[in-house]
Length: 278
Image (cartoon, helix red, strand yellow):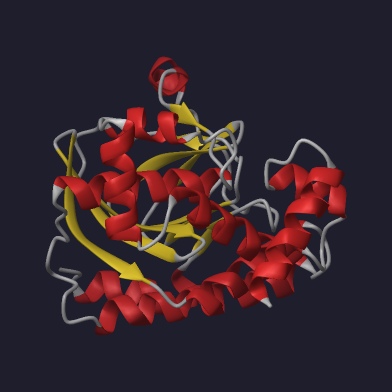
């Protein structure tokens, strides 16, 4: 459960300090040389976008090639493929973090509490307004590519994220930890991987191994819980991402983003998808 102080940090923009590639970073780099060895083994890059709100305590945050001190009110905007920490650096001070993990069809909102070097998940909330999620990605894309001015992009992006925060705060289930059975957990893991990579190099055999099931059982589970086959779900992800990028990217860039080997194969796929839509 969020405290009144934590809610105040979420709703008051004046209390926020931004770390992002969209605007110059106002926070000075810190001297965290004692964490260098740990970070060399706990750094990641992935395709999905993430947002972190630090709600209590103090923590160091790696962003790209630098490490910054973070205090309550710090907001970290992570674009896809930006280097960052893969875990929390072990420290005695307690801290609370709200993560928004942006996937094409869902934003996984997770509140973590870091206590005595251990992570405790306080709650999870799933935001599923697809049109709004697509708009968040469109604004982020426009800001990253210079179509929107940095200040305008950040203003619009924070406004859209505020709607996600509002949905969290009004949810009656925000104090409940969302639990999965093993089948749902496996499918959610596969969906998350597909969405974060746009289906690049994601064979059914690879996804089955990733989730710990046989190929046939994984296919049955995916169809049962996702309501469609892996191939159909991958096409859906790519179509949505294609729609988001079509006015801001060249066809070659879109083809690369979606994992196609050439512009020609991308165009053939898109024509096939357009015929299915009719």
